[in-house]
Length: 328
Length: 263
Image (cartoon, rainbow over all chains, first blue to last red; front, side, top):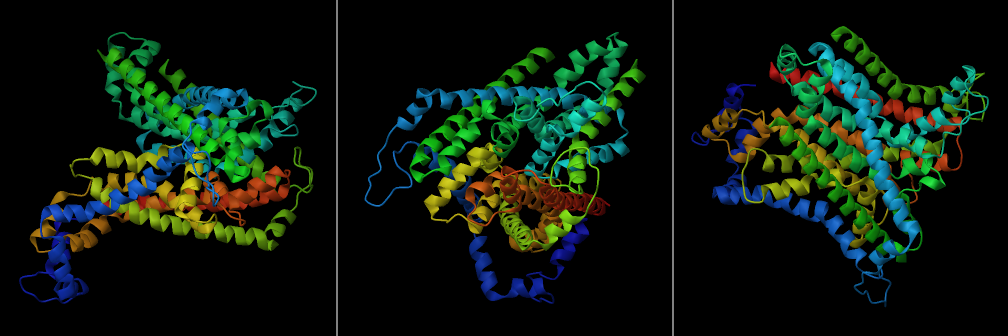
């Protein structure tokens, strides 16, 4: 498109001639429309307000509203409120969390698992992203990347099920190990933290890969060449040049994957076992039973949300400090 | 040394490709197994599970239900997301950062928390669990993705085009409809497909906001909880083929459109 398109767009709505030949021309000459436009464009300030009011209302009521309502419910003793019952303010729901091991144990387990899985995803995808950005010609990069994107269009449940078939007692992995003569009887991979980890890494790998890839792709190759000219070996080049300059990608990839991993519900239910109960399952439990448990569930979800936020904020601060320290 | 590195890294890449594809391929294969029992090796093959799926009225209506939800949610997300993107891109005003932060919030809230926050809010607004509630939750959840994609495209729109249109007498609405919107079409289509897939594949929000009628992922989940069977593989494969086909088609389509508008 060029400026010609712009002039084409308006040649038939020229207000000075007052002649409209097309739909747009007729529209801009239609008096109710002109009156409306007169009102809208009376001043830049009013024009801006009209543009801004709907997005502002939408994000306040639809994006922020659910979170605020969740926090509000977490501070009450009954929700949904039955007729004739009075709702009271209380902190009991939060106290309940600290009072019982079956509540805080899954909480810490979830955070530790999510951190561990995030680290595994980073280790697994960094070389892949590095290969794509550095060793594949620009023409082929999109193709190679697309190949990896295809499985990620498939939904969470279907991919979780695929992992169940891979790791089951009569699954493919056990069959391969048995055929190779490495094992006599199947290894029970399923319903452990291992199967859960394989599933979660499988589901989140792309969210790590894409930020890493774009960080590595932006990094000029000349930096590495300069370091090589100055006598730095491959490992030193990686540690002193590539790694510090891709910290931003690492940081955003880890944040994304961590937040997503803490929120999985179906995957731990299907791939995990009794010893790997996650906090998502604990929270969900309060919504399956009668409604009077909702405030507790809301309080637990609030705790988890703020814990995840604080942890990722601290992590980003750390990574920022690391980057500044390294490039000094 | 460099050559050795390269070979090693390419091995890692192809191993990763295997890791992402093999589980799905195994899952597809299992749908053709001629036995009720899930597991390897597969000794005889059949198409019965597929004929069963396409003859099952419940599964077919679930498929339609999921598709309808995805389409409705996408229409809302795209309209709202484009509006927000137009407000945020290239404009400096007081509170812009706050609005941007609130805009991306739904994309950053972990799944389970987002689902129960929507569940509570639906109750607060008086929306009954069911199709309306799912459409609403999916729409809100997908808005941030539309905003980010549309903003990226909008930032490359030459300012001179809008100025030229305004100089020639176009009012803001006509300038938007005839200059900005046509320029945004590739981004809007790309974002729409992404939203369709997100909504169609979503489990956790559909699960907590659904009524008696399940969406496809919820149906697969319910069947899995009562035991694995090649029937589930057939259903999952149908879902997989649908989503992957739409994804690949969209990728090609949006890339061609991007090329066209660049030329």
